Image: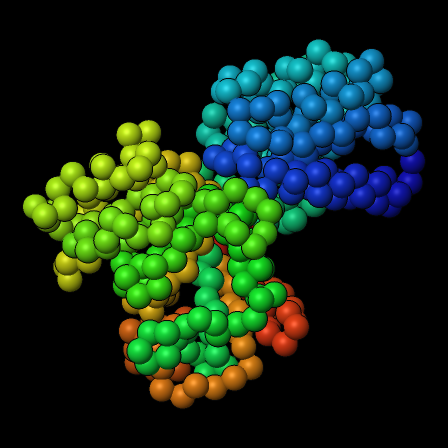
Length: 379
């Protein structure tokens, strides 16, 4: 076969596998999103994706559909087939047993439990393996998994609704609503795609948000509050449904001792207090918080404010992605998204690369990725 045609077909089927993998968004963490396509004689005979954590992996789903047709086929999978026992048996040996001829892999699994071992199993069995087809797309799809495995921290997305002059609220803290319904719906979709959502205590006390998914399909994420002195009220709306973690650095006040443990459902872990190391200024240490969330299997963390929290993540360069919903309006004096940052010169600006802009019935949705995170994904 002509090499150009072969390369085109490989790319075509791999993009299909990546598209299938994306269907697992919000359902498979801490696992990666994986899709698989099985092709024989230019005919798709099997396809599948990892549908939920603890369920069958994509390769197994595709092999079940393909049945005997898998023998002599080519398998396209966006992440290296696993080689170890986890919630399910390893996939690489299953592909060997099925008698496939060739496996095309987009990305080598960075997890040290795999990291080339699955590919070696296939090659030792005489199966041809090609690696790197659509690697960039595959890496982006699983950027949260890749970062957590490499660094121990989740992929951090800063999400904010702002005016054209950079304000997230009026001077008195009022912010409902800066952006329109379509922007708010998109923001809820973001929540559904992430494993956890984080805000500061000030945001909870000012807005009393639920931090759940309401205007879009999907599961609500874990709720994380940075509350150095455990100030937030125990009747806050965020405790009404879903799991929540309150991260503080000071001793729990005697007046609140045991209060969080008495919240509805707290006996099954829906409400927890976590003592986190304090920084020099007494605030919760962000690095330790991110490490804690990484250990919990959080691949994607959505940070929703307020100003002090945004400023901390930006100034310490602990963010990977931004998702800004900009309303074309001015309010002048208000609370700015990064009010606590003060760079000494223009060349010290903290930048990000815009990867997409969208118009949402008048609002502008700007998505970007930080420069240091771009480098991480190319490692």
